Image 1 (cartoon, rainbow, N blue to C red):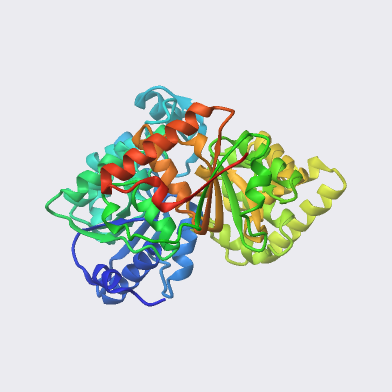
Image 2: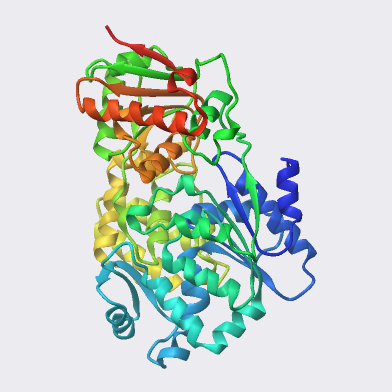
Length: 509
């Protein structure tokens, strides 16, 4: 892909830069191009850190970069804080009892910083705060970097630039940590985010941090607004949800891309079927998991087969060995998932001996045989040997979650979404994905609060060519009516446009 003039300007910019990137504007493409150019023009020993919220996003960046980035850090927020700061420098601040061979288990919850620190000292395990909106990992990393001169010198000598993706999902402590590296250590930052896509405020995301950086004098500000994903009508709808993007509204006589169906609960699946193209990809996005399951069943019964995507048991594993259970599950569930795909999942810091293919082939083949013969003891033994090989500690309960995930076929679609044409998931799970068609329920979004508007924005912008909004008129009727009232209020407040002017409205008899 080539770069647009706006994207090229961002790639060529120097110094601290924050980019407001609306949905579908090619932010990852721009960020990767920026990293590549900066690395090619770097003539020092220093490297970069590209920090994301998910392993999947980090892997995508690494795969898109056609460069040797083995000396750079490309990984998640937590792994950066743990591998680059906590493990190597905790002993410098807290003493020799804090050795580098630490594990993580975020299912262990403590109330205060000192409790978490003491647990780390005695168990060599990094835990979490009981309050999900607070962040022990980054509180610890921030204290270490403030108190350890060796840590500060290390970061300054290693990194010439740090790139942070999805910054609107950072919490207050993460933002404080990153701004310390920027303002006190004078490491350049490239930040990408969009407060409209902040859907994790319930677990501590603090989009105001992103907004405040926009006002900082030591940061240049650029904007990516042109949506390359959605058709014009869907762009109009999503742009009108925010004052920031309402000026991008372009009047269109064609309203067929967005359909609002006013219908009773029993009739909605058949109504959707009238506007649904079975040859194109489609996602039903609901707020609650149970509603997504019921929706998939209802559509399937109406002759429009949909697959519900559940949350597998291993998704709740929060230790540093979580990648291992996930990789084994994929190897056992996905026919095309090879030993080389498994190797790609291995965190860089855990790879010592590169000649691991034969070892993994033997162990993974044994696990498959043990699954067929119901030999759980054999599975446990093989998983323990793999974990030992890579230096990870594992728990018996987590192995049972992995076995349950592999044996129960209802969880398998979660590992094979790209090959499913019609799926039903929560809108939280849809972030980062795109579909030709999207089905939403107006009753899921009252649009009364900023967080609800953000949620709706993320769900709407998953759609490329068709958006079907179902408003149930006989169940939770007040929620649907509130959605419509507030939608019109937003549109008119921002641009004087009515909701009826951007969608087709149909009602069952």
